[in-house]
Image (cartoon, rainbow, N blue to C red):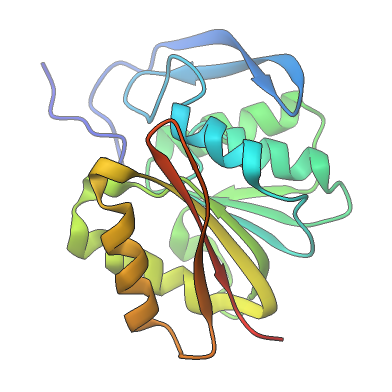
Length: 201
């Protein structure tokens, strides 16, 4: 047994790649996954809920905690003229997301670690199934690293399981972000909440 988590930078488990079939953007697609990452067996339920409710992304797009890439790939296909950035701390996830983007023929995708992204970039759309299990303090730090980088008029959409603190997270975001910003619950489905953070134009 290893102590690997999906938020481990360099998983100790064997990097055993496998090809699975998942539904993304309305089509069955083959993607590569591996052990030591988030949801290697398929599309996570929370991610599926998020993708069901988000509108078509626009502008420069960010996926926080991209894993093997389902959100990044969907955003890039829906907005082929946009730049889509996927970030993750897990090196295996980064490699897989890059491979899957290449296999999908997507030239508008950049995947890397958080510190590989130009700190001056702002994002018009953020989509995320954030890594709740890293712990509350680390999650808060992560969100306050990226959400303030929403461009004016930008929107962040996140999915959080109800029993893992979605309602308390919504209250925390309201308290932390500037008062002109809005934090709203947009949907509830299958024990998940979809939250939206809106920065005024």
